[in-house]
Image (cartoon, rainbow, N blue to C red; front, side, top):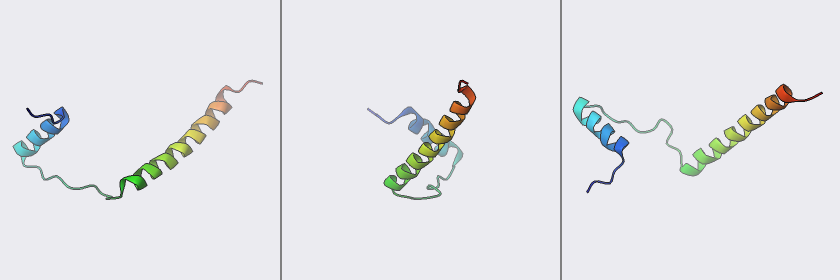
Length: 60
């Protein structure tokens, strides 16, 4: 029984059918670095969205 995900099976079928060559990622960074950068950008986006939400809906 093949337990791979549907997206993997579809992608493999398309790759075999059209002869597409799969390349690696553009930036091959360790997982921890990617998570750290994601958290930093999420925090920055949260501050920006929170500040603008406060400016938009503040009561006088």
